[in-house]
Image (cartoon, rainbow, N blue to C red; front, side):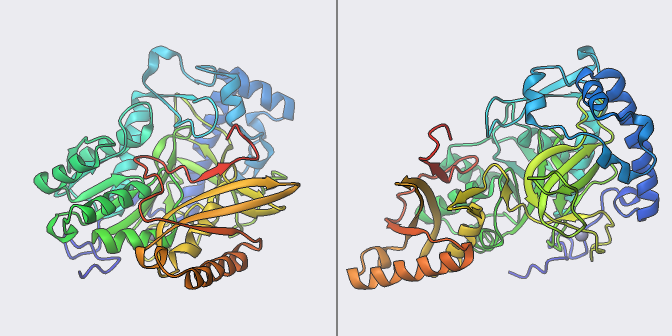
Length: 449
Ligand SMILES: [Zn+2]
């Protein structure tokens, strides 16, 4: 299949830019716009949200202290704990009667948090979803198959309205029932698939089992998000489904999907900086890091009415790249997230992200793209066990050869992670498949996780 990355296969042209005025704005002009919007937002939350007023007062800052964008660093962070303390509606900056939609965070950790949207917030969300879906090559000719769960989770609705705004045909399939998903994809000629990357893999596996050739489908592009994934997983999905797989980013607390998305250059996700100001901080000290360094992404909403987050700690680990992009968009790109700082495993004092392990496994011939991490303590020592599916040839191989394979994988992991891991080979198809976000870590050191 001939799919050059910056040519839209549907039109044979460079894909259009949804909102060139904002997406291609000069840096100086953008910063002026950010400054005006940020100032208005700070004023509004200080006036309307007691939690922000109390936090600003405790820090000795008022919205009047913002003279330059860099002054944002003087303001306190907001985190999940603030949302919990103000559950359910305490962080809303408008009266409930102005709120037209309520969602909730996906609740990956702890109690879900409640988020709200005014009519204008929903319009913004729809526009931004249309932006990143257009950047991924979706046009009015596409049939967009949404296999995210519809409900309190923002994923499905965000892309649903974005696709309709573009003029594509939307199939609100929701998650689960993989066989039916595949049947609908075949019969309705779905061309764009929206789901988590791990579910895309589940679909590919199932198609293989059913003897369905992906080339017989109309699928050409995938818009995957809601969990961190690696370039290796991207290649795997692209090869197996015969599509271009793109990444997008968002979180319910900040808006939902549509905070950032990849263009077809696929060299980072453009953050829509006319609506969100990104910062990268050291997750331990909270210090702002210089551009290009890896750290925790902090986002400030500058156009949200109902639920504007100021310096929200996303817990997502990434890096920002301000270099110009070949697509013509000027907005900063964030690298694929390496994981959440919450997902970071500390094994014998070394920081390990599940995505690092995934990267290693994907490069090894014979390893299947399904794995599970089990962490336990033996005495005072942390032990990381990587259970990995292997193909039948290796699984049923003679003991000596299998042992050599395990040694090889363990050596590769140790050199990539800086800490040893025990590898256990498991039978093909024995690791649980996921219909939503993958749960890959079992931490027996802390039974609550
Ligand atoms: Zn670009």
